[in-house]
Length: 495
Image 1 (cartoon, rainbow, N blue to C red):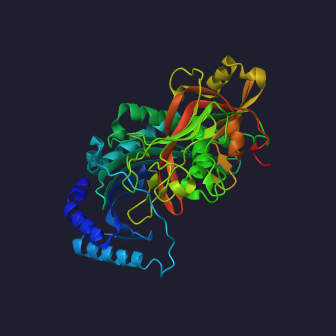
Image 2 (cartoon, helix red, strand yellow):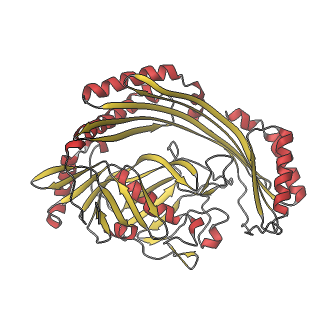
């Protein structure tokens, strides 16, 4: 797919010449995306697809600060030039159309090409072979945990972009993404519970990679056991409790409860802003807690450049409890009072870029040791960690929220609502198992409640994030486990 982007150079040069002659800034976004996926249930194909898109988006800004955008689903020269003329004309009538004006700062000029080696393998994926392999893996999971219904899936995607600006910027980058997932369901006492597991790689050979397959089988087995056992588990009482959350739920907390509020296009309404400016320097969490967003190579949400052609920077949103950075693009950085971090992303060439997260994480100073891999830790091992750190001296019982099953936040108030996959009540005398429940409250209460962390950073909690009708890959995490002291603004279950 990337050769298509290499071949638009001459058209790009003519687009830039016309934009310069018209006296406007041009941002030209060209995208190709190919995707192959297959889903199996009960050893039989349920769905498969092969798809691709190619097109371009024209974005112009006049000297007066008026902006207009347009797009086409092809890369033909004559229609592309006609579209540019039309968009330039629309922007030129900005005053008559009563468009808002927004000046942008001088942008860094960048010329780069970033295409990982793994990109070449995406279009060589053979879905029938993948399907046979998934049948084998499904059979292995069922042999380990009988009594559940499984749906297994594989998806390989190559998302490639070339972004040219009339100031000389020309960046080309490709993002290969592959994932293998399992969803286990079972019924009991009139209800059904579904639990999912997923692994990610940039390598399309994931279904045959020994390390990737071992991790997939381990996670899928845990999901199947939970799906089998959850229908008979009791509900946990509601209230505020000392909590342990794993890195996947910590990623949800960082992403939903804090990340969206730090996106600089929300500077007028975010709980992190005051009088239209972000409250940089204010304390928003415990002083040993930081929140960082940055693109990580070979990650599910990796994107080296923004959709405006600006290198995406590491953004320290919270530095030891204090608000420092926002996730900003050229149109939101100055109005929001934050530095430009190149955070704009777009789902497709048809979309208007907007500040979005990539890989977001919670870091805690001086984390305690948790030897081995995260998958080595079940509720018994988590209880042992708490005992070794004397947490039970402070809290005789601690509620362990395992896994993350989605959530949402109100960036205006900072209130979040999440769901976990399972609940365990841990104490020196035993472990009790409960159905999942809503985890909700104030992001400030949660961030101030973080007390201890165990283990190294683990950042492969992946998903997709929706905002204003656009969906883009997201990822992140934290240390293996975080301990949160009880806070009256943070609740488990109904209020």
